[in-house]
Image (cartoon, rainbow, N blue to C red; front, top):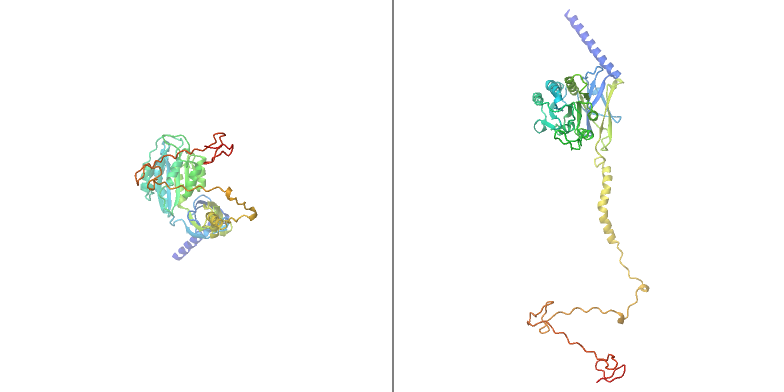
Length: 448
């Protein structure tokens, strides 16, 4: 009797196993899973890490998949998965709550305080090595909890941080969401951890150039959706926003791979926080090496398929931007081509000067027929005489130019001017006569 009962139990267990297997196989074959690439990390390029969510037709996470169930392509080319972490395996995650603390947020602060312990326990139960952080803001960034921007692995310490928030100030006016997100991006994250921000606000954001509000100036150029998105992407941050329905918030969520929840229409705020925690806890981490590991600055398309082996798998997609331009690391040939113009610019001027100096033609004498005729001696201009040395007329001692007395003999150097020469002229006709002439060459008058 006991053996028959044991046999029946084995048959029932086998039938249950086959039923579950068939159901899973049927779901895979029909492509009924929903596959979502929640985050793409390219900071270790050419190795790319993906965080992937898989849910069944009812929306519940599928937590029992293995590496063999996934197929990944980049730009249509299959890749080899080099690392895989499933649900239950260690996958570090750093989560920062970016919290609006204006007066209208009292119930939301209370809700996060009540759910943060369960949020952390859900992460821990699924093998997520978590750290939690908190940034509070209104018109200004009011506080970054944790000394030096550190995150805590103690859920009860995080609960004390939340309990210390005070909701006050105006309601539904623009607040400094972008400034708080920028402040959160500078916190002390772990290099290997997935980075997630949960933005909670019921107000639109202030922008760069807004007039001062509450004594706060908005003169930081990063206070725009585009600039903040670029900062978050550089830090590989995914943003989940439980927020005022604003286009900037939707853009940030879309570009960082997160999810948006309208805080004014969602019926259950604490349920949203629990849903985010469950999604993070059940994500798969897939790491592969890019099949095109060139530094070309192009955008790559990623496709993740679950159950491709059944013939009709479910697929989700994502993209990432290889942020480098062509450089020496692309290939040695590309590096040489890029550096060649610079090398030519540096070397060419010196080489040209040297070549022009060597090839400078020496002037050749003109042909004899073109040489100017030599001037006769009587037409040549005499060279100016060299100035005679200035010496004393009494002792010939050299004198300084302008000296009034000789340092050798002490006599005055002032020389009386020579007497004026009298030019003889003919008393009759006024003709100039040669000195010593007795007769005028002009009129023949005899000089006495």
